[in-house]
Image (cartoon, rainbow, N blue to C red; front, top):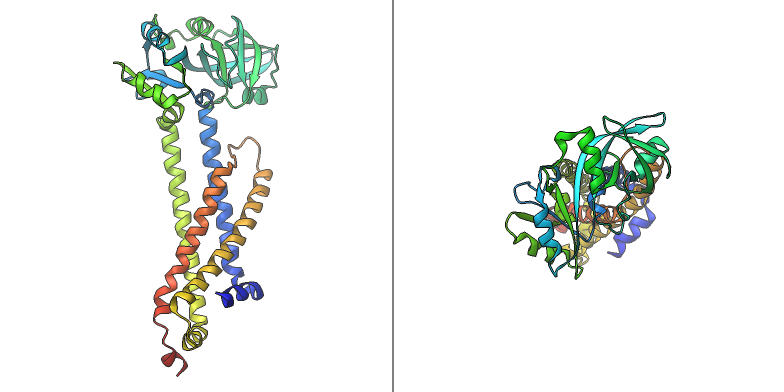
Length: 361
C-alpha cells in the first residue's frame, strides 16, 4: 500500500489518462444531475410550496390535480377533525397572462384557500400572488396590473414569490376569485358547483405522513404527502427515468474506464508484482494498493470535475433549467468513488495468477 501511494504521488503522469477521462465523466454526471434536478424543481414548485402539508385528491384521480374533484361536504368533514389544523381548496387550470404592453405568457393559474410557509394568505378579490419566474419573463412588479385568460380579466400583483413554477410560471388567486376568473374565461375548466379539484390539510401534530394515512381511510379520498404527489406526476416520472438511465450508463462507462486502465497497468507492472510476491507480499496487499490508487485518482478527478462543472454552469444561459443541488453532487461523488473502486477490483484475477517463479524465471 505504501508503494502504491508513493507511486501515485511521484508519478502522477502515469495516471493522467484515466484521471482526465474520469474528470470529463464527472463533469457529464454533474451536468446531467443538474438538468434532472432543475427540470424536476421547475415542474414541482407549486406542490413544494405546500411542503409539510397533506394534499387530498379524489380516489379515482390517480393523484392528478385536474382530474380530481372533491366535494365541499368532505372539506367540511376534514376541517372538523382533531387531526387537522386548517383545510383549504386547491384548484388549477392552464391559461395565459399579459397586459400593459407585455406579450402573452403561458401560466398555471391556481386558486387556493390555505397559506403555507411559502404562500402568503390568499389575496383579496382583484389581486394575485405571482411566481418570480413570471416577473423574470415580463418585468412585472408589485402593484402592476396583470390580465389573465382569454377575456383578459385584470388583477393587481399583490406579492411576488420565488419558486412556484409548475412547468410554466404560476399565478395564485383566492379560491372565489379563481372561480370567477375561470368562469368568465375558461368555463369548461371550472369544477362542478360545490366541488374543488383538491384539498390541502395542515396536520395539527405536524405529522403529514400520519395525517395522510388517516384521511386516506375516508371513503373516496386519496390523501398523500407532497413528495408522494410529486412522484405521481407523469412528466416527473418520465424525465426521472430517462435521466437516471443516462446517469446509470455513464457510471458503467466509469467502471469500464477504470477497469481497463488498471488491467493494462497491471500488465505493465507484472514483474514488479512478481518481485513483491517473491519478497512475501500477499495478493490482498497488492489489490489494496491498486484500490488506493483508484480511489486517489477518482478523488482528484472529482475535485477537478466539480470545479469545471461550476464553471460550465456559470457559462450556460440562465434560462436553462439546470440546478446544482448539493445532495445530488454528493450522490454523484460517492457513486464515482464506489464505481472506481469496483473497477479496480477487476485486476484481482490477474494478480492471483502472478507466479514469481514463472515471471522472474
